[in-house]
Length: 91
Image (cartoon, rainbow, N blue to C red):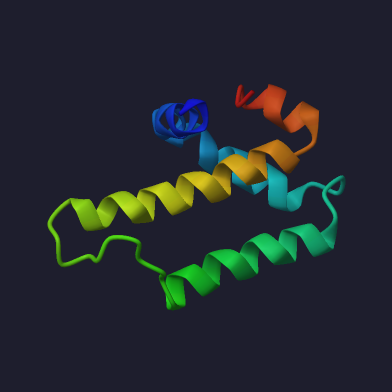
């Protein structure tokens, strides 16, 4: 339950993600392999989205897409160097 709530609150910080993602992918502290893995996961999900709830159900279909996005971003934030998390206030 705690993880689910943290993902929901993460949605409200969405405006901080774009500068964070730019800094994350341009950072020399993050391994190149780790950057490639996140990029591959993201594009794979865009090309072949795995839907827990099908998109033809209004609004509910969007929920699983947001959930997957928040899961990936939460994992990426956890793996980011501490100074990037502190700079963008994503602790």
